[in-house]
Every structure is written in structure tokens, then in C-alpha cells.
Amino acid sequence: MLLYNKQKKNAKGNRILISVTVLGSAGPIRFLAYEEDLVASVIDTALKCYAREGRLPLLGSDFNDFILYCPMVGPESMSAWKGIGSLGARNFTLCRKPEEKNKVVKEGDGARKGGSFKAWINKSFSLRVSTH
Image (cartoon, rainbow, N blue to C red; front, side, top):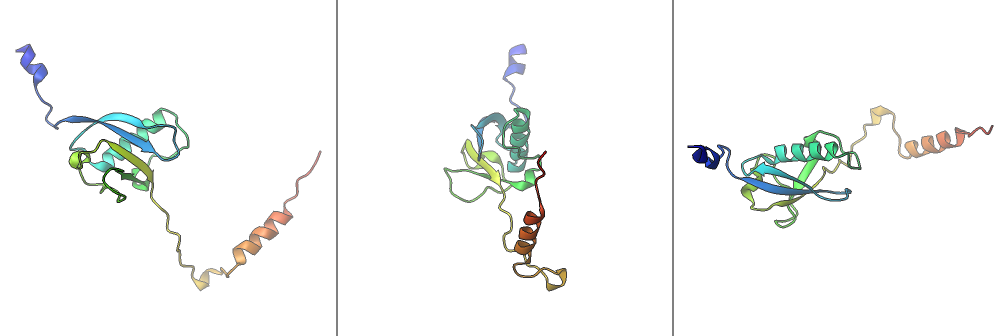
């Protein structure tokens, strides 16, 4: 009877060893996950392991800011609501979502073309380092 209980399968399914490489970090993070786990939960687990190990650069803890890629499958990011074992891959790359570069500035905001650069120059010249 004891032998039967040890061989009993888990209700969630098979566990797999996942290797997640974070861009800019020294090496991959390895941990066990279930094949049915969502990509979003795998990203969350990877961020927690990354923070627990004290790795650099600091990433944060919001899994919505990150994308998980599978280099063997293609350049498209994985859907956050798919199972991690759906592709059959075990090696992944984690990186930040790209920020929007084309933000529209309204005229009512008081921003002018080139105004931010001029303000930066004026501010940088007004800073003076005092010597003792």
C-alpha cells in the first residue's frame, strides 16, 4: 500500500525542468514547473527566483512588464495564457516588453519642438559644483 501511494501521479500532470535566461544576467535560472502551468505563472516564478538569488540588474516583480520567448520556436513571444509545455521546449528567454517610442504630445501641454533639449541645456549649465 505504501509503494502505491509513492507512485501515485500528481493531479496537475508532469513536472518539467525549465531553464529561463534573463537578458543582461550572468546565467539561466532553473526550476521545476508543471506542463499545464501558464506562461504568466512561469514568468512570475522566474522573477521571484531571480530576486531571491540577488541577481543583477534589478528587474522588479510585475510579470506584466515581461515577455517570454522560446528561441527554438521563433521570434514571437509566447501568449501569457498558454501552457508552458505546449511547445515541447524547455529553454526560454525572458526580457522586458518594449516601451512605446511614438508618444503623441498635445499642443495644449505647452511642449514645443526642441524645448526639452533647450531646458536640459539651461539646467545643466546652471548646475555648478562647489569646491571646498
